[in-house]
View 1 (spheres, rainbow, N blue to C red):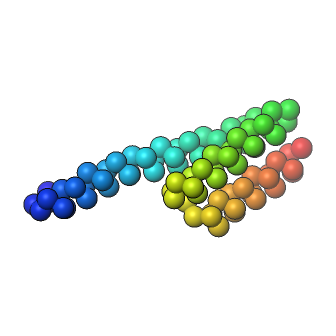
View 2 (view 1 turned 30 degrees about the vertical axis):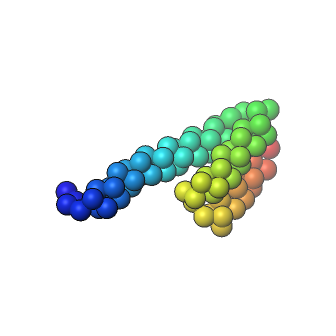
Length: 83
């Protein structure tokens, strides 16, 4: 356990940020799975929602922009192959 006041505060902050990052990553993974498992009629709507969630993850700083671009590109490519 940290002894100094600043180290204790850092620990609290890290726990809070870790929980938020986990939630955002989980939301992102769920959105991607929905796109992959949705029927063709609903895929377009699910794809838009997933892209939005990925962009929000970048905005919050959970993933980098290049990672988001790669994920979106792969999603779009997979969606076109199925359709």
